[in-house]
Amino acid sequence: MKAIIPSVKGTRDFYPADMAVRNYLYRTLRTVSEQYGYQEYDGPFLERIDLYAAKSGEELVKEQAFVFPDRGGDEITLRPELTPTLARMVAQRQGELTVPLRWWSFGPFWRYERPQKGRTREFFQWNIDLIGVSSPEADAELVAICAEFFRAVGLKPSQVQIMVNNRKLMDQSLADLGVGAELRPRVFRLVDRRDKMSAADWDGYALEMGLGAEQLAGLKALLADGELWRKSEDFLRFFAVLDALGVREYVRFDAQIIRGLDYYTGTVFEARDVDGGRAVLGGGHYDNLVSDVGGDPLPGVGFAMGDVMIGVVLEKYGLLPHSGALEGAALVTVFDGERLIDSFRLAGELRQAGLRVVCYPEPAKLPKQLKFADKMGIRFALIVGPDEAAQGLVTIKDLATRTQETTAQEKAAEKIAEMLAKPAAV
RNA sequence: GUGGCUGUAGCUCAAUGGCAGAGCAUCGCACUGUGGAUGCGAGGGUUGUGGGUUCGACCCCCAUCAGCCACCCCA
Image (cartoon, rainbow, N blue to C red; front, top):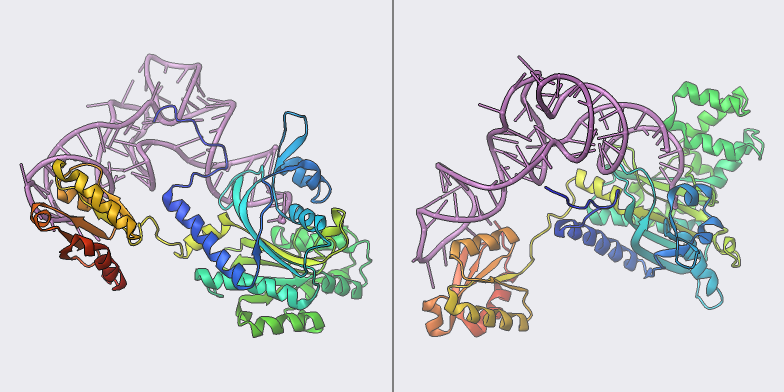
């Protein structure tokens, strides 16, 4: 191959088969979102850098956003996340929006990261938030939506688990251990890193930051305590909702889940491939998001799921749709040069009747045309040769069932609908 | 941004420093009114790119780009 201009690093080309996967995700998460009464929204793909500088932390803007000057000299960024945009949109119309808001979105985002498996520089993300209520039930609803999505794509609780914790509970538990308030944020970071360090290093790090030996022992006991949530009234209510919604089996308490983001103030959760440990989505409860961009305080809970990692996981479990097929489509074959125009005419009539129709664009041998239909996943092939043409007939061949019948051309659309209704089997 | 591994046909991969190959896929033919099989055949390569060492480089060295892995980060 010579001199093909390469694509931008970390971007993906969406061939029809890839596009089918992307649309499958979009369709599925839309269905789940809408079943819970959430409304779709979106913001601009370009934002002023100030929007993120105000909030998300230095790392995001300085290291991981695509930033460039526009012709007027303003610093513009390709959006690396949606939450600040959401906060602004809510703040701008805070007086007129009816809370609680239930909003979702699916669109492209860009982060200037080093690409690897499950991580690209251009990706799609599902964002879904419930804003305006602060209750364990609201948090549970979002977690339930996660679980419903997993169920909808065929992921089982044995394959993916949503792990939940609560920062307030952890904060209180640390206080009970005698850990001072000023030290607790650093202990959170420590907890967040536990799987990334050796046990010895982790212990050393803990002691170094000022934890006493008995406090460290207490912390370890805390992290290992799978029943810690039972001490929390909020958690009891939270899990009761998940029970009621029938998704309890997807969710489990894990005191080690902290999440990196500073703005989470209560419930935090992330979902992972059980056999791989990589997070496919994450979210939590926040109290101050809207006030951070200048609005009045308004609590909320939400999560974000990228298309890349969930795609990797679905692929791994063989849950991606084998796409490419032109569902329910028909191919009108071309018998010879003289009848080419008749084929186009028939194709046009069938389209008028509501069918998805491909017309072979030139005369060719019948086997070749049938092979083409096969490879394209087109189920029906229509043949009008001299025999049929003389009587205004058409032969409809069902490639899936290997059967065919000949009918009047006017009845072809009807006949195909009839054949479509029958399961293809095979 | 840091460290490491890997780049050979569309795909998966071979080839002691000595003639760049196979399978699958694609296309054609067997097959002028019937598809997934079979057989035969064809096309397809500046070995990621650019330098260097060597009589000679897919192979060794340097750089660069890309993919992957770990870190970082995970909005």
